[in-house]
Image 1 (tube, helix red, strand yellow):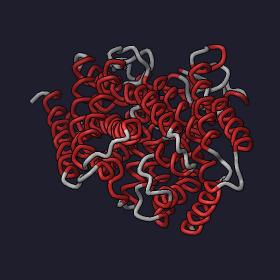
Image 2 (image 1 turned 180 degrees about the vertical axis):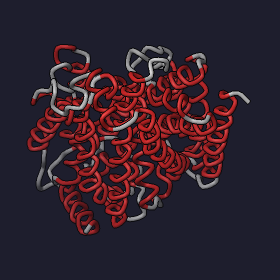
Image 3 (image 1 turned 120 degrees about the horizontal axis):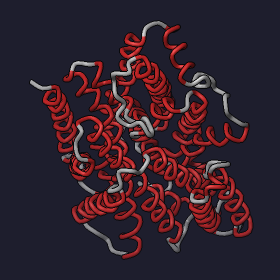
Amino acid sequence: MSDTAFQLIALAIYFAAMIAIGFWASRKNNNLDDYVLGGRGLTPGVAALSAGASDMSAWLLMGIPGIMYMVGLSEAWIIIGLTIGAWLNWKLVAPRLRTYTEVSRNSVTVPAFFGNRLRDKTHILRIVAAIIILVFFTFYASSGMVAGGKFFQSSFGGDYLTGMLLVTGITVLYTLFGGFLGASYTDTVQGLLIFAALISMPIIAFFYVGSWDDFYTTVTAQNPQALSLFAGTTALGIISAASWGLGYFGQPHVIVRFMALRSPKDAPIARRIGISWMILSMVGAMSVGLIGLAYFTRHPEATLTDTTSAESVFLDLAQILLHPLVAGFILAAVLAAIMSTLSSQLVVCSSALAEDLYKVVSHRTLSSKVSLRLGQAGVLAVSLVAALLAMNPESSVLELVSFAWAGFGAAFGPIVLLSLYWRKLTAWGAIAGLIAASVTVFVWGNTEALYSAMYEIVPGFIINLVVAVVVSLVTYKANSVEAAEINEEFDRAVALTR
């Protein structure tokens, strides 16, 4: 049996398992609330692993190893910032958001929470938030599809478009039926697969490099600055890279896991599981890139498929060093990273279309069955648009993720934090902040002189925070009925979180 046949068998087993979980989860979806939030019944382990897997996406197994291979440890400031940001997100946001979204009229989406929490009777805030989700998640979902195409191109020498459509099609299939629960449970399995691959692959590759001295000598000869955390960096550059951590507060596909926890008391356990998984996985991903540099330097007969960005280094090492069946399951870990993120994004987009746009704009009360079908239609619609954007195989996975991450972090992050911790935030303050941040990210992120100096999330986050606070102070009415309701609800959420 050929190597390719072994690898395809492993991938077929993986695909079948994901589809089976999706169909199993579909039996638990009775209405749109079940489809987009799973009945608020996630255990700490499922919430933590599914949040981690949906968060990391393909850049964990392709982007990080690639940038480590090409540049070195000076790019690790992104990982450091992300780890700190993720810990703070679980600590500050998770328990209170879980409580507050239920207290505030049982909000099942982030835009619905903003609208209910701030008593926005115009529904403008909810609509603006939903549009932002759809715009940035279309780019984010597209990055996963691009990674899927590159995966098949690198692993099997196949056609980019065929691979992209296959990965997208299977992910859409199990998400379409399984919804949030399907995405969460498949993400959990995928998170464990990713973890196993990232821990085992660098250890195996290291044995083919030799000793630590062999590794150090080879890497530094190829790139003298590869193992330096500060080489070639500036204070502004470190701040820019570490600022990726700010993005966590505003990622809808991550914080929706907080909303779906069984109880706010589950948050500390989930935080420990999630951060442990994240740190070990990140270290594994960085190690793959650096050890891969040593391996391909010492073994010139071996070929790196993607010499431009080195995003194929993980895939190439697995195929060269492992039995083809084992390599197939390792390769499935890359698909797991791609598909876990993509499925979660599709569910959030579905809820934005069905729950936050259609129902709000149409003012129609829909039956449970019609609402569920509407959510599924949203999955298909967003998938189609993202797939059209992913037709270009030259798109960089890390660049697409970077832009979408900044968009969500800058637009939603400050509003989430202010909603949870500041009583005087108003609907108009939130609307102004969301719009100001989104415009800033789009302009800054598409102006080379600006984004080369500072990651667009920083100015977007700061501008959002300042605008939201200033406009809220101007529009806040302390003696209004809405202010009294908000204060009572705020106190109740704080008390129930303790």
